[in-house]
Amino acid sequence: MLLAAIGEVESSSLRGRRLDAAHDAVPPVRGPALTGGSYAAIRDSDGGRYDGDPVWDRAVGPMQFIPATWRIWGADGNGDGIRDPQNIEDAALAAANYLCAGGRDLSQEADLRAAVLSYNHSQRYLSTVVGIIQAVTSGALAGP
Image (cartoon, rainbow, N blue to C red; front, side, top):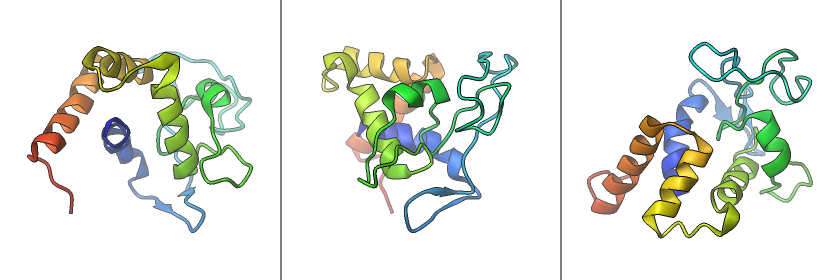
């Protein structure tokens, strides 16, 4: 449920895009440059490899990983031998691994909250994700 809720929050990154037959985002998802304005200032960590920006980092892919985080947590969720943040299967597995790190028990509220805040250190983000989980589990938010 947690991964789905985070995916729902991050899914705005897919607007105007599609997933191709390999489940890669087309065109690639690249967030705004992290120059320190509305977001943290994060100097380039990947030479533009993932985000196309050799000066500033940008969150990439459907799950919006920062390149330095992807380098550590990136995963091959579809078994093609490539860890690609633009691939939804790779990004979802990487997010799951990241959220469960350190032996977190996501059935425990404190661990769940810590996991979400480790993914995005914002109380507003935490409230949104927890709100989606509560709406789905209560039946107030139903799928198509």
